[in-house]
Length: 346
Ligand SMILES: [Fe+2]
Image 1 (cartoon, rainbow, N blue to C red):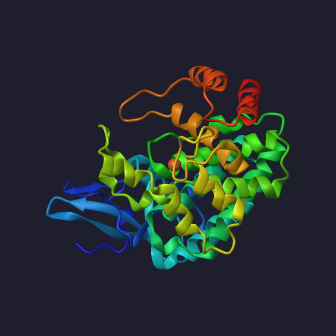
Image 2 (image 1 turned 90 degrees about the vertical axis):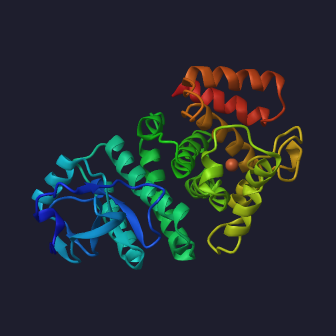
Image 3 (image 1 turned 30 degrees about the horizontal axis):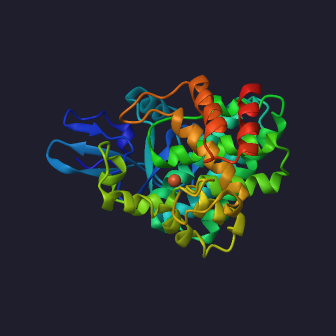
């Protein structure tokens, strides 16, 4: 049956709605349902991903046409069905990011939302941007990176209003084992930390961008390699260890990414004792922003679940970082001491 709007008809028994995942097509990009409010006029087509018993491949069916008002009954239906992501086509990318920016502007000035709610909303919008940047080459353009700087700026604005309680970054993080969520968490936590260190807003924002994109070179590896839980072969380890150089090569031509965030990407696996990669640099040669990222990246990885282990508690991660501070020379001792102090105060 041909249906003009999927959400106006009952779900057929043979249909299963699919959520966003790594198997998404490059043409259709995920859009989080929580970015929509009923009554909004949507300036792009929205699709729902459905699989039927007769067709092995997912189909993307129209559920809100361009410039249509998003009805309350559709919102309720999506909620009832547990659908958290819809889709838009990559041709509408600019239109979608304009829409998200407007939503974000409205939320910043909303008196109905407190700072935590604003922080969560901003996190979700940056999450959509990051997911699309990590999964689609079409996003790899200067206007899109400039857009992310605006989103990060909004986040910095909230952090600065919330300066008595930077710990709210811990409440908005989501852990789901995806590369882009890890990068987003590192970016948010890193921006809170450098704000604690007293960095001015613009410098902290550039740090946030470098942290957000630090593992982009990983996207050049296969999904199988990224998800592998067993020991890696020599060749696989070599592939993984190329990700800082690959990320640097991918980002160096963007005119809006300055030298400091670029060197964060290149140096973020260098260790102070020269045991890191790709260049085996000693501490004085590692860019200071990358030394901070090395610490925040490790902490975020420790406190997230991995396929092979449970997440460590913040207290346990803090204890490990403390013992590292005493015995190893991997981390910059001055920044590590400050980070431990930061964690114990929030
Ligand atoms: Fe990395």
